[in-house]
Image (cartoon, rainbow, N blue to C red; front, side, top):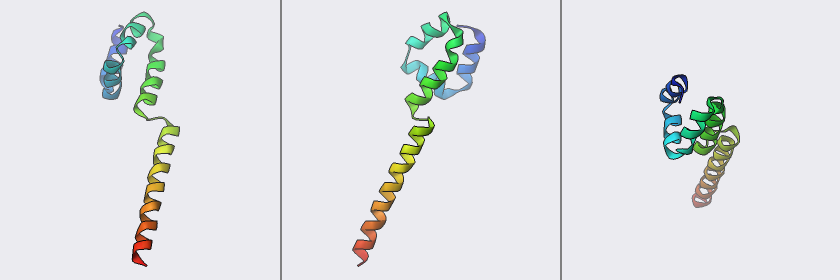
Length: 77
């Protein structure tokens, strides 16, 4: 693996965790250092950090909050 790629991975703990969970990326990066961007995309998707995943998570939290508020208003009556 190229030293520059290794330094980028060490600088981001989330990437390092993903790489340890998906060891096939070691071989991929050693053979093709240009695949680093693909690694970053896959890591974000794996960790749920993409925009659609974040929006979905916020939506679920809002639904849960709405349910609690509805339940609280029902109990208040």
